[in-house]
Length: 414
Image 1 (cartoon, rainbow, N blue to C red):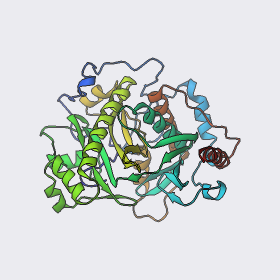
Image 2 (tube, rainbow, N blue to C red):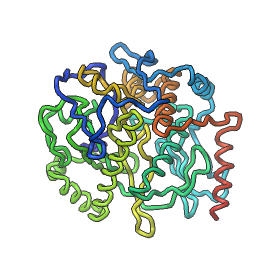
Image 3 (tube, rainbow, N blue to C red):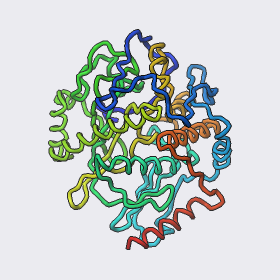
Image 4 (tube, rainbow, N blue to C red):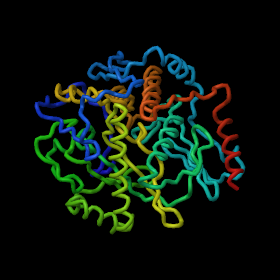
């Protein structure tokens, strides 16, 4: 992320740098003020955190949710699908009418004339490269986003037209704003550009957001903050120190984006408002299901008729950080890292075992780590949506299934 808006979700050592003796200031915006941290998760959701850690190095440990016997079928399916992951797609060769293919870090996007066909693969990326393929990840991300797209229509329209396959969304064509709208609710993170790192380096005005002295790691911010970042084709563009000097308040940062020709002021103001509303709503829904939505990022576009729409993904474990709610306060007071539903333990493993930025060849991710990440993604989907994850029929090759379903869907749209 750019200097003003990192949303890196690194898992830190079990103990934070400072043991907190203060309040977490865990107060949601007005709609959530009646909630208290002792709220119990909804019945039917298993949020235990005593499951023995699958991944551990000499210095890091991660508490994760207890799988339980009811999930043995899912774990078995994950282990049986390592060789059937969707790592690459070639729909332009198998589906009539599809034109060019754009390969993103996780999604493959196909030009279908009046439509875009977005295929969410099982690729797991970090450090600007693919680290592994995670069974069922693409399906989880696609179906999680579809659920959130549907739930947030009262806040903003979106680009979704249909979902003909578990891994596929067909969307309206639109012009994408080259700005990611990152929203944060906590001072956390451990990378060089994370809010916590910036804060410990003495920064108290972050992208126009005044942050008070005296905060500790993983503490709730007084209010949610918006920290947009500009984007290039394949990575975020850092804001230079000289540019950052000009960004003294939120309005000036908006002026900077407008002056760069990235968005009009009206569009910037509308999208900023939508992003904050989406995050507040996402926090409320997550809290009602025993989770804390910590931070996330949104992308928007504009259709040919001038309508601003939400695109890409919404509140997925790839784009967001989630913590377990019921143990947050106790762990925060003890100076422990929050129990989480994150992907970053895999990233941390690579940082511990190689230089993922410079090494030409990376080691293979251990199967137990891949299995754990697949489980976490499914756990989050079921917890948020309240539904049961529908395991796909692995007897049918996944690419063949997608090709058939997309072909039928496009034919019905013509």
